[in-house]
Length: 518
Image (cartoon, rainbow, N blue to C red; front, side, top):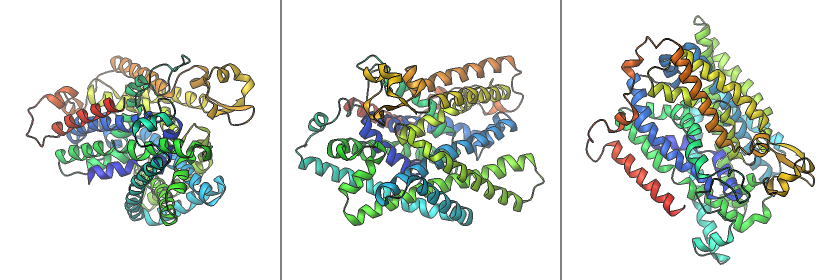
């Protein structure tokens, strides 16, 4: 149950639309985000969960206060609200609006408003009960629909003479079926999803999401025992190996089968549904996608209301009444939904929805990953260091994000990049206009590489400030793990049911899969 809850909390319309889009656009290499997530969840199980349990926390903001101080907790609450607004709500509504636009020809902006208003109404009125019901429905419908789409796509491939993996590879783009891409492209530029950026850069995002996000970690912290926590996380890790086959691979199939119908990669899943599913199932899957959007948005709104009232307002004004806290939470939810509606259309400027949800977190993920990782592994880390790291991380993350937002520029201004193939033809959006990214294109720095650089800066700031300030005087030393290696290998195995045995089996499986799909 814990593993399934972790998996369904992660998989939503954003993932279904985004993974299919990038499968169509670049291929199986985007599946590294899923397989690297499986490795990160193993870290959650074996390193982070034992620490959280030992610290006696029930929420991640509580960890921040216990490990550092209340100021850092309030800042983290604001960060969580911002990430929910920009990603979980804003990008989700854009994904749902693309479904409305494709199937019902409803304008994008109107679709965003409809999804936002309806979801905000029944979230603020229905609360957690409404969320639980829709979560259950959408998980079953969407996962079953993905498996069915993949099966029907394979049948369609057979009908056009593609009967093997070699046949599919020949019909697809070069390297579209490869999981491992070289560091440099054929023209000498940095490959956006090279093995180096994926193997190192992913963990800046992965640890932030899987090991420090309250929405995710609360699923394991609710278990009865440490062993249940760890095995539940490991089951989720195993499930994360599946989206490559049922969410990314269909995007590759769409390129082979329906590339002439797809002008916007974000429409890939919609085209697959439209062409492969019979009428009744087509409507059911489209409805499931929209339900999943609303489920994601409502969960984020519910979390925002709680964070605002409990972690910010109640701490600043302890004497406030419960009735006032509830009212403030609901008002905040409506403010956030309006801001998310205004932001949502900008998600369409990115190469795909999946790029958007992985690039936006670079605003804050390097700093958050740093203070959590160092907070768990290094007892000498101080609250001054955490606060400084958060400030510096946001101060450099925001300018990067704004500078690298794709914007339309005349092809003539960057003709040398277009002519050399540095900017692929798919990003030319008009006869004389191209989507241009100052950092990624102009400086040849893929966003995953930028993530590594930002984390290195945050890490340096954290260590230097920690050594310049007095050592913590609280009970951190009693809570600290001796080291991640001792946490994993410092005690004998407790039989075949030991979580470390299952973790080892998963690692062997992941390595084997990489050998097959290299």
